[in-house]
Amino acid sequence: MITLPGEKIPVVNHEKVKIIRKQFVINPDESSVIARHSGLIIDREVKGEHKLGLLTRPKKYLPEAEDFVVGIIKSRENEAYLVDIGGPTIARLGETEFQGASKRNKPNLEEGALIYARVLEHNKFERTTLTCISTKDNKQWTTGESFFGELKGGFVFPGSISFCRDLLDKRKTQILDELKKHVAYEVAVGINGKIWVSTAKPQNLIILINSIKKAENCDPESFKLYLRGIKQHWK
Amino acid sequence: MAQFISKNNEEFIRKSLDEGLRLDGRGLLDGRIIQIVFGDKLGQVEVCLGKTRIYANITSNLVEPNPSRPNEGFMKFGVDLSVLSNDEQALSQHRMHRYSAEISKVLENIIKATKVVDAESLVVQANKLVWSIYVQLSVVNNDGNLIDALYLAAILALLSHKTPIVTSEGGDRFSVKPDTTKYPLSVAHIPIAMTFAFFNEGETIIFDPTREEEEIMDGRITVAMNIYRDLCYLQKPGGAPLSADVILRLFFSF
Image 1 (tube, helix red, strand yellow):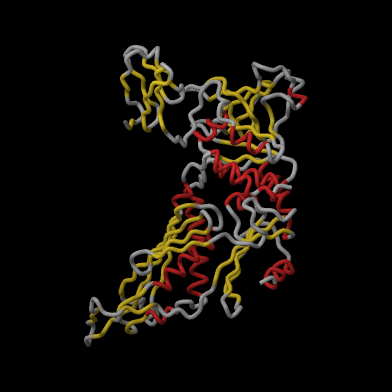
Image 2: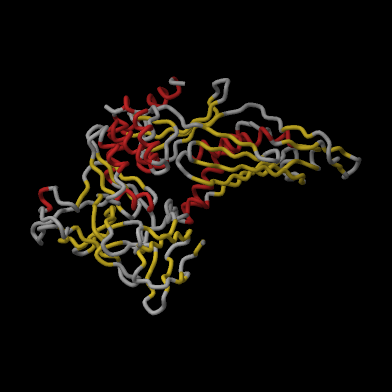
């Protein structure tokens, strides 16, 4: 069944149905969920769990809280940076929103710098706010080992949002694992459709960028064969 | 929202160019694969230069000549760059008009000024009837190097377009018989446009830049040459200064 955004899909008991937060909105009053994108509805029972999914290829990024994004610093406001994350509005990152940062001890980011950040809040009326403070680890921003923060060097390129979501999925790490066997690299995937990669030698980085772009359109088996075919080009 | 290139990308592209590497694995002076598809009607052609895609269409009409130039036909170029104003490329309306006017001027200068199709060959009868050729070009996707792609589409469309014979029936009356043989336009020579982007004051020159390379280049230079090695056209629109020996080195590398 094909659905358009905003359409209500009737569900018998929506507390027992598993949905992906980004694809549907639970309608608490009625027994239905509302689709957020246009696409094909997949309704199936897996091991007793009722799963509802939407087969869609969204191109436009809509920010939500707790999204991990790659952003470009566009300019500086008083006490904040304005960051372009490809969403409907520009996002705001406070100057001291870094792990262990204070007014005297904070990073100085230039225009055009890349950051990996977490979306704090987003609603229609205000600007999206970002933070580079992680809830899990406690590495200071000065060490360069913190999870979020400035991305130095490397190259950022766009990928479709469904591809980025798959790359961030812990159960689907085949593509990144395959690449690990050939070259040592660092990657930051933003669910806003931007992928950042970095590796030591420029020739390897070029091959890495082209391989990831290719992986978007092929399944893991063919990707393995592709990597085997280009093995001799890695330096 | 306008996307602009991050500093990391710019530094990486520049560093790779210093080592002779380009993002898509090409050599510095290699061009992209060109795909040409001719349309159903004569004078329709689609050109793909890598991912840059152009559609060309020619319409020809019979009109009265300009009284101050009774021995010349007309040739006009219309360049549609409206795809550049979508979210990702975000060129403002004003800049888009200026860019499309600049490209039309380049095409006119190469094709009309060097008499690729001589305006006099478009005359049916002097003072009375001439052909007016309108070359319509639309950009479907921009992945860099619009000028070369648009020029190639225009020249291929002109080479494939055919017009019927117009016979005079005395006085001011002319007739065109449908279903008669059509003849191509008389094309004197075929210049080919080549665009180069340069960095580091001309130390690094690349051929056929992609959109990412165009966004960070120091300047650009377009050259048109034909098979007889005549220099038909040279354009350097602004950008960083280039010394004369860099330009001469470019010519001798062909």
